[in-house]
Image 1 (cartoon, rainbow, N blue to C red):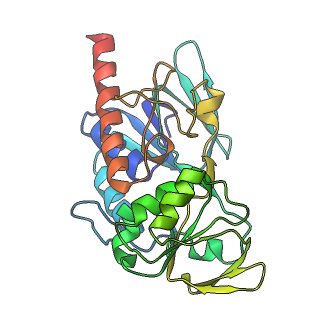
Image 2: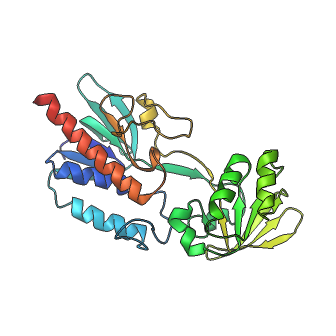
Amino acid sequence: MDKSFEVIIVGGSYAGLSAALALGRSMRKTLVIDAGHPCNSPTPHSHNFLTQDGVRPTEISSVAKSQVEQYDTVHFYNDFAIEGNKTTEDYTIQTQDGSIFSAQKLIFATGLKDIMPEIEGFADCWGKSVIHCPYCHGYEVRYKKTGILANGEKANHYATLISNWTKDLTIFTNGPSTLTEDQTKRITNHQIPIIQTPVKSIGQVDGQVQNILLEDDSEHTIDAIYSGPDFVQHSNIPEQLGCEINEHGLLEVDGFQMTNIPGIYACGDNSTMRSVALAVASGTKAGVVVNKELIEEVF
């Protein structure tokens, strides 16, 4: 396999494949490096993506890859990218098996890695009935008895937002509340209980929440839980190359998906709000902008 390309895309899920499609249609010699482990793999259905509402995420990506493969300038390599370097003329990416590839431009579509809290049952339900986004999953649990597992500003944000989908809400702060006095007053005025007892476990059957068990052995029947666990960048290569991370833990990009390092772009969950539709849109933009930059460099 030729090791030299015009563009290397690290990450081959929705954003990466979308960028690859734009570049394939621009006849750019492109390599997509991907190990096949998207962060939304536990999620049974994708929503709020026009023409694909309710479709399994794996089905969307499988169809997408088959379409991108029709463009003979786009190549795929199944492995983890573990290191990146800048040379005098281009960038290099090394994979776990020791292969080294080079390109003039890099697009990182590497996503995020969620850090599951040490609560029994949480990971089993993640992406199924423990969810992070009402636009992706809220309609399916509308009007249901819903918990919010969060504290401080995040709990306040969820309580305000989720009240549009259900009024049957309970906040579990999993320890002493860090909500402000004003936030607490506003939340309780909407008859939303705030429970500060630490959470022991989440009772579940096949990933469907049944209840929340607290450290004092009290039990609360719950049908769904909103929670936003901590996360880190799935790949540290952009940081190796000097790309900036913003205060939200995301790669800093401008309106054209450009990072602060010339020739390096980012798209998808690693740099924007989590959404399949937004990942596809940002990937298309990254691919189009990279092609435009390559043209302008020689014209």
